[in-house]
Amino acid sequence: MSKTRFPDGFLWGGALAANQCEGAWNVGGKGLSVADCSLYKAHVDPKDYKALHHISSADIAAAEACTEIGPYPKRRGIDFYHRYREDLDLLAQMGFKTLRVSIQWTRIFPKGIETEPNEAGLAFYESLFTEMRARGIEPLVTLHHYEMPLHLVNHYDGWYRREVVGFFLRFTETVFRRYRHLVKYWLSFNEIDSAFRHPFSTMGICEDRHPKEKLEEIIWQGLHHQLVASALATKQLHAIIPGAQMGCMVTSLLSYPETCRPENCLKAVRDNRDNLTISDVQVHGVYPPSALSAWRKRDIKIVMEQGDEEILKAYPVDFVSFSYYMSMVSSVNEAEREKVGGNVTSGVKNPYLPVSDWGWQIDPIGLTISLIELYDRYRKPLFVVENGLGARDKLVDGTVEDDYRIAYFRDHISAIGDALDEGVDVMGFTAWGCIDSVSLSTSQMSKRYGFIYVDCDDEGHGSMSRIPKKSFSWYRDVIASNGAGF
Ligand code: BG6
Image (cartoon, rainbow, N blue to C red; front, side):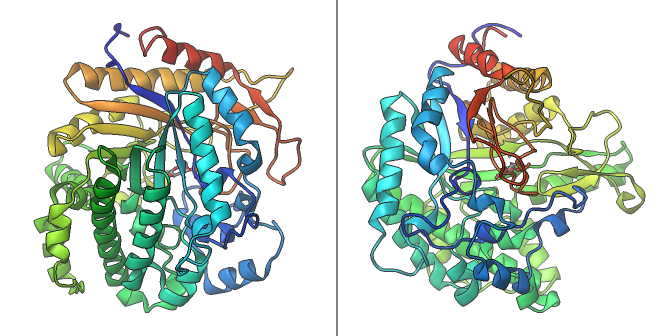
């Protein structure tokens, strides 16, 4: 590790999503969201990501009828809603410069359609952001992190219906105005490209409510609405908070060709290009020719309103943020290959890479490659807003000896340093799930990512007390030395 190559002001910190940590699912006037329907799925094969994320109409009805936490652990979270001051104290002890959190739309507009916001929800986030600032922690706020109001799912088919753009913009305008003195960095849609992998949590589209053969077109239509909403939210942001910045947030799913066989290389080029189609629109302001040609070939017709194309062009994002957990492999013989699980996806096994307890491939060099490629493609500042290792931690004698997590972060932070050395502009790094929280895909507590252990098991038993792991002081030292000393 070479010394002092991280720039001054580099935003070191961690990331959480409101629906995975806050709990208090029915407190302060909050409405139900897609996350409140998300079932505990510890026993589903992590390679079967479709099954992990699938939610049927019957599942939604059962969730609405359930007035308790029941089989929905995200309703419990880690009680961040009541414990955030104590949690922020611990993050401040680590020297966090930033904390990525999200605002649950349903705390501000419980159904998504109201004309007046819910003051209790607004006051909660005002206090959260104020307390962050008091500890020198810059808020980085996601507006839409798998938290869509369930009312919009049931009455508007999620983002498929155009009216939702207007509802969302009422929400964004409300929070921009209320937090204009508190929040400078914003992200519009978490992993916006995930729509095809899990349309329910990403855009509130329940698959069994639509004809199978129309689903791709419906998802594209929803994506178009999200892209227009993201551009218009960027316009609002710049008008309401001068100097504030909006980032897109995409899933980095870098794919290597399985071999140098030209067919595999061509497949890798296409897979990588397709993974970046949505961020291409958010940065360049136009749909790439490959998307237009795919629509033509598959007879996909997107309804655009007059002025949509101009909106996309006029309000691109200010920076590009992404999650990075693993790399993938492109193979023309994919069907015959051994598979691995992954971050809201699954893919061909790479024999050169170790895997996590959940079978996710660990590839720090892939992070350097992703940074180089994204910077070459976009020439915008990059922000690594998710990266981390989900593991089965053991609490022994009041701590967790998570040397495996330290090794993981050492390698990945070093990989960012390598990209910085090549001139890539990186704004910051927020480690995913800096405090243990409920897993997105399986709703397990036992899939732990944090520097801070939370005493709560998959069934919700435990005191919820917070216990620093060995990695806590290690990361504190990384931040204190601005990435030089580890
Ligand atoms: C990202 C999501 O895809 O992966 C997070 O943005 C999520 O919300 C993270 O928690 C890790 O996934 P999981 O399923 O292990 O929680």
